[in-house]
Length: 142
Image (cartoon, rainbow, N blue to C red; front, side, top):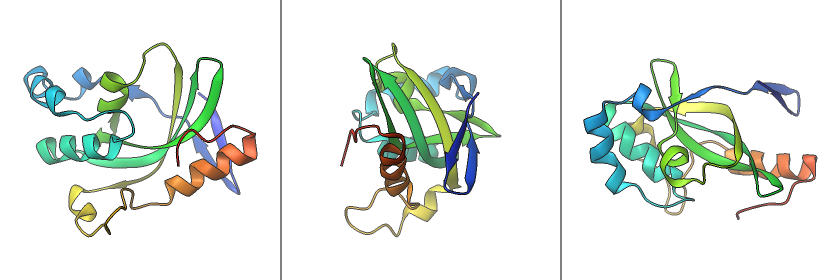
């Protein structure tokens, strides 16, 4: 496990459980056909939250894939202190390394008042951009 230094803060990498450790297999089979593609993690996390009551966690993920490294903003879920990522498990290539750093978690209802075009309640988009700049990694999204 690695620590991530962001300004004066230190964030610790967390363990991500397999979805089957947190969700019933029949529920997983119901969810999987409704997942949207990479880059839409917040939609998938909100779907899981709507069906299970799980919290939505916003954070950054350090991705190492095909000799490239970058930080991305990301949203995943948590139930009873167990973090799991439906998008990462079922929509991302499984031959890279991923490190998760949570910043804040929200109940599903807190997303009801998002402005048009806004996906995240926190500033994880700006955090990921700053981390990429600070560590000299390229931006992989806008």
